[in-house]
Amino acid sequence: MTIKKKIPSNKAQRAKTSKEKENNQGHKIKEKNREQLLAEFGLMPTCGNALAAQAFLKSSVGDPGFIETHAAMSKSVKKVVAGETKIVEATLIAQAITLDKVFVDLIRRAAANIGQHERAMETYMKLALKAQSQCRTTLQTLAEIKNPRPVAFVKQANIAHGHQQVNNGNITSRAENFEKNSNELLKANHGERLDPRTTGATSSLDTNLETMETVDGTAKR
Image 1 (tube, rainbow, N blue to C red):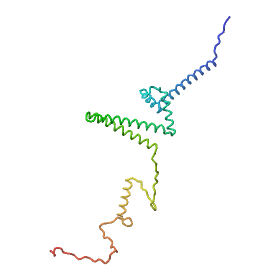
Image 2 (cartoon, rainbow, N blue to C red; image 1 turned 90 degrees about the horizontal axis):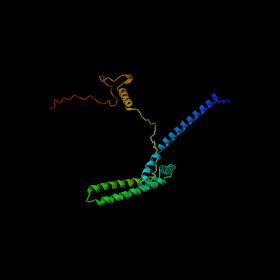
Image 3 (tube, helix red, strand yellow; image 1 turned 60 degrees about the horizontal axis):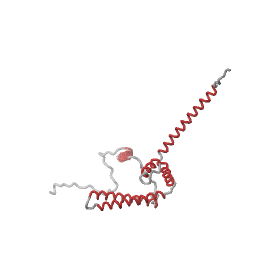
Image 4 (cartoon, rainbow, N blue to C red; image 1 turned 180 degrees about the vertical axis):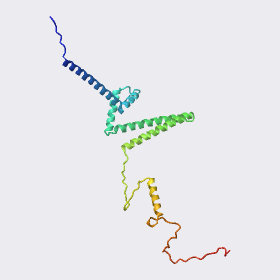
C-alpha cells in the first residue's frame, strides 16, 4: 500500500508567507511604539523629578518606589495645572518654616563661637543670613500668589491738534534732505545761483538813510 504525501499548493505557501510578514511587521510596530512611549515618558518633567525625590525620600521615610513616587507627584502637578494653588501655598509655607528653623540653629551656633572661634562664627553667621534671606524670599513669593498685583493697562492719549507727521527714516535720508534744503537756499530766482560779486538790491525798509562822511582818524591824534 502506497501513502501519498500532500504537497502544499503555491496558494497555501503564499498565504503562509504573507501571514509571517504581517506578524513581523506587527512586532516591529509594537517595538517602535514601545520605544516611543519610553522616550515620551522619560522626557516628562515628572519622571526625572520623581527619581530625584525618590533618592531623597530613602533617608527620611524609606524607599516608596518609583511608580508610587511618580504617581503622587503627577497627581499634585495635575492639581496645580488645573488652577488649584493649595499645594503650592502649602509647599512655600512649609519651606519658609524650615528655613526659619535653619536660621535659628545657625545663628545659635554663631553666638556660641563669639570670642573663641572667629572664623567659625563668621561662617555660621553668613549661612544664617542666607537662610534668613531665602525665608524672606519664600514668604514674599507666597504673598504674591495669595495677593497678586493688579495689572494696569494704560492707553496713550493723543491730544495734539491738526495733522501729525511721524518720521521713521534713517539718519542717511535726513542728511540728504538737509543737504537738499541747503542747496535750495543758495539758489536765486529762475534757478540761478547767487553771485557774491554783484551788488544787492536796495531795500525799501528805510529810504531816509544818508551817506556817512569820511572820518580821518589821524587828524584827531
